[in-house]
Structures are given as structure tokens and as C-alpha cells.
Image (tube, rainbow, N blue to C red; front, side, top):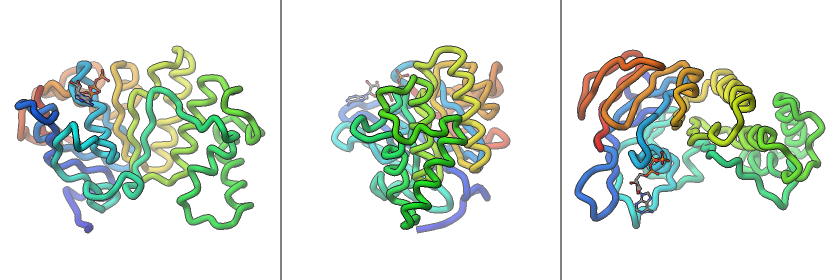
Length: 253
Ligand SMILES: Nc1ncnc2c1ncn2[C@@H]1O[C@H](COP(=O)(O)OP(=O)(O)OP(=O)(O)O)[C@@H](O)[C@H]1O
């Protein structure tokens, strides 16, 4: 099914998302709506347990229906995806810990990202892997065992694998959290450069205001406050009015 909302159909649009832990009367996320244009990052902050990761899981299609009741529409690239299985949503997700297949080489990991792509030519796939590695400062790393990589190198390879799967939106669940300060800045710039270059609408979950600052976009906090980096712009409740340039309504705890 396809359709358009607010002229942002090429981005990521959430419409009235509600999520509750089954058996609990209070919603974890209550009627949240927001839009992220292509190439922009919207940062989600909020206290531990406020539902940030759960929201990303709902978008990616990983939410356990035995535990959570969820509703609301998700549009990515002009298509509603909430009824699709995770593998058909074309949504990339990065977690705090870079997860690489230990039994595959670096190239093997990246080729895994390409497996669903339309590149049937083996040489073309290998060239794409080499180009991706070179773009990340990892030229010649094809045959390396993932266990020999540094934390920052693993993080970059994990991002490349996600990007090679040609996602239409990117979800970042504290992907900078475990990196030291210097690496964190470097990897953050690397991620955001790719987001802009590829026009990927991106949601970033973080506890670090510096991440939000670097993302240079709108920030929402899942305890009813909308902020831009470093300052509160507007307090919102359920069904709140739009906040330019993106529209969003509230969540509640
Ligand atoms: N499998 C589960 N069974 C029951 N409740 C769960 C389950 N997984 C998560 N929850 C609950 O859902 C709520 C939201 O968790 P979530 O991980 O989304 O929070 P978060 O905002 O990402 O927290 P943090 O910042 O600590 O990562 C928490 O109260 C948690 O206890």
C-alpha cells in the first residue's frame, strides 16, 4: 500500500504510535507522531525505561507481540510498512555493540549486507565491498577476521554492512555509547555524513546531549518535552500542535 502524508512521503513518518507492555494499564508511548525528512536526523532522548528502544523495535519490526501491544502507522519511502515482516521493511538498525559475524571475514560480513541486493555479478559485489571499505578508511581489510579489529573499526564495518543492504531509513540505538570520546566524534561524523549523502531519514536514540548537538536536527524527549540541541523549545502533550520543520505529537510516561 502506498500514500502520502504531509509531503514527506520520501522520509520516515510515524503516525499515532502507541505501545504498551501487555497487562499494564499505562501506555509506554502514547499517540506519538513525527516526520523525518530524507537526510535528516531526529534525536530521541528520555530517561531509562521511557520506551526509546521499544519504539525503534516497533519501527524495525522486532517488537515481541507476546510482551507488547502496539498500534500506529509507519511510512518509509512512501510505503506503509507496519504490517510487513522485519526483513521486508528496508529499515537499517545499529545498536550500541557492533555485531559482526565472527565466522566471516570483513568482506564476508559486508557481502552479507548485499545479499538481498540486485547485484548478481560477483565482481561487482566485491568492488562495492572494496569501495565501501576504502570510503571508511579501511582499504585492504577484506580478509581480516572481525576479532582483530578495534572497536571503532568494528563500528564502521557494522555501519557499512547496514548501508550496503540499501535501507530506506536508519535507526540508531545508542551506537556511539561505548566508544571513547575521540572515536565517538569520528564515528558520529562518519555516520551523519553517510546519512546526509544518502538522504536517509534517521532516528537516533541517545543519552548524550553532544550526540544530539552533532545531529543538528530536532530532538524529542519521551517525557513530554520537545527540545532542540541545548534548549527547550516547546512543551507538548498528546495531540500537540506541529513543531517546525517536523510535526510531532506527544508521548507519555
Ligand atoms: N521483554 C520485556 N518484558 C516486559 N517489559 C519489558 C520488556 N522489554 C522492555 N520492557 C519494558 O519496556 C520499558 C521500555 O524499555 P526500553 O528498553 O524501550 O527503554 P529505553 O528508554 O530504551 O531505556 P534505556 O535508556 O535504559 O535503554 C521498560 O520499562 C522495560 O521494563
